[in-house]
Length: 299
Image 1 (cartoon, rainbow, N blue to C red):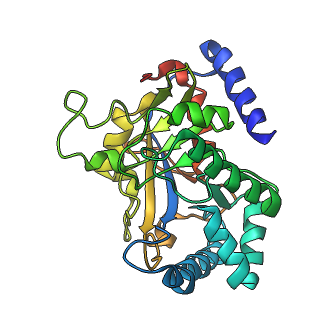
Image 2: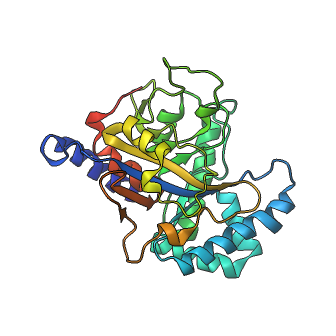
Image 3: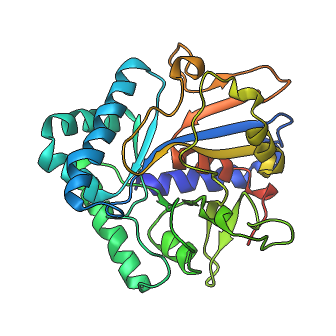
């Protein structure tokens, strides 16, 4: 129901975009904090539970307490289940921040899935398991497919996502290509509309850049890479991950430098560089960008 409301708002904005939404003149950047964690890679499951899941909770709970503007995104229903089973005290705090909208459930699946080899039915079941858990535990559902670290993305994803009521997809893995694939670019667009064979389409952020990005005492309104993303993005908009990936969760940047006082997430900088930088959830930004889809490339 909540996803349907988001879609209705987005479609209404699209219908009125000729007058209600104007192309912006200044650059804008949406920065998405994450702590991508492979459930099992160069370690066993017990290490994931004992070390990495616990660190993800403890260190982000510290950030929430210290910085009221901090927003965090984390995927994988199975990891939340381990939080509940092994760390009930921290899990209760995680649930509070989810209800406040500061800890954002991303990805929609029980665990990150290979979108190439398994059948679409397997993908649907993975989403169903994840969403049922999220609804039961937190009273909310995820609204996106978050696959920052998968090798390749099947053509069925837009159709699967649309039929599950999801509105967006994001990754950074396509930049791992060794050579350009679309003219001089490795992706057809940074932010755009991905259309399935049946005509279903979703918002897609295909160039989230490295999810392990950190900054140290820097004014990122002058960051050349982010400004380049904004210049190349739809409606002068950049979409970028930051945080950490796998193993120990480290602090993503020198937070006092970037998170200003006040109740709002957005930080406004001088117009000479990036005037608007928003530290935010994954799909709320995709929904906002969706309002300007009349400016987008469709693929």
